[in-house]
Image (cartoon, rainbow, N blue to C red; front, side, top):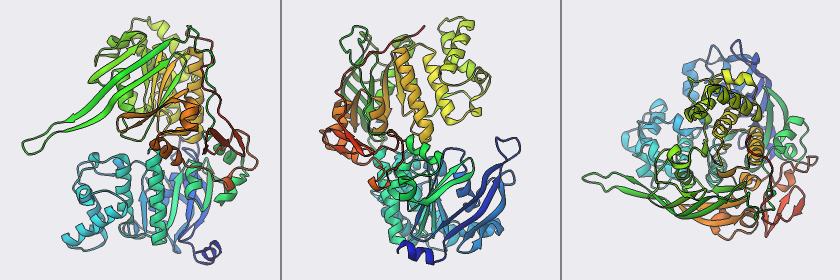
Length: 587
């Protein structure tokens, strides 16, 4: 159906002047203010914005999932095929959910019941709307699981959620949403926490199902790369207000609002980071050496079932100099996080050696026994790694105090580090839940630096952050690396981030390093098919959608042309890999 034909038909979803109030005492009175959007059958409309912009509030309002009475619509209409959803009671909304409207949530493990098998959970959708026999129900569920590309759907039917990978769980959520063929599919950040190849597969799956069934898709995201891949229309939201709306090519190619341009400028570009120039300087000695490292996870068997062995790391060989950043890149399950945990001592390894500052680290043991606390880790989920009952100041200072640093000195160091990561001294008296995700990650960095480490291991530290917050945290990592001359192991599934942050990259697949070398060489001239697959899976802003008036460093398109990367309209060859001297250090 052409765009003009779509405009001549009645929209599937028509939101008019929607306002949603927040409880008293919040940072603003309304979560959404006078928002309007229109979505036709067969179209995909992307709602883009940072955390707190109100985009998920709109999705929850359409589904009738707002936590009333504290958060509820106070003005406007939400029309589904001309019917105002805001006038319906809960029984009527329950009949619509699944049959007419369905939703895919950001975190499938949270949305799925961990103690119910997958088949049982999908059967609940049929039980709520249709009267089917057990045999027909099972057949339709297995067919739905097959439709979303899950291998061995009959086996998945009888599996528990924890047995599946993140991408498989998200496919289950899509099957659950699509099983009754709704007219409107709402996808709330469905690919945010997925690795780049799984993200590409999920986006392709949603597009394919949309083409087959002609449904309308309301897609919530903060990633303009994803927008370029999937959107027909775009709505940009900031602090509850729609600041820009239009065709995807128009919004991406010629953004009118400063906030839209800011989001585009925050996308990690394809530029390879300027590396070091003084590799022979004695100041930049080898900090880390990994030799023939092996790690295998084993599950216990039973009388009737053999145990399983899953190799997570096989004969890994890496090295890292002071001041350098080594990127570990790969899909979920590639072994990159396991390798990071082995380096920090959070997981024992089976064989091989880890040499830190010339000293062999024992297999297992505490961080103090292994490295004198000179190896520290920044985790993917800072909220889960912070004690919710401890104030931030105490959380940061506890490590130095445990190592014998006087309390006054530890607190002074804490306040200094809070200032370094962009938080004021008042943050020391607050609790983790009082901070945003980006602020909590800054706290995680400050806590790691409090131990004055020589090696920092960062495990997917920006994967769940908004693109603009991600840019700020990456800039902070670069700042502390230069100020303290840190060696860093940076674990990520995003090659755009790796290009920006890393001197060297090790690409991992199924526990093996399949490609390893200087960033410019690995990304500019990849030798392994898996590396090329990762590069090809990166969401790209299409050439016709490049921002016409954007700054030179904004909205870069990552493409590979031999050893030349394109950035906007200009092509350049990446700098020769080397190491650049940095000044500074711990006081």
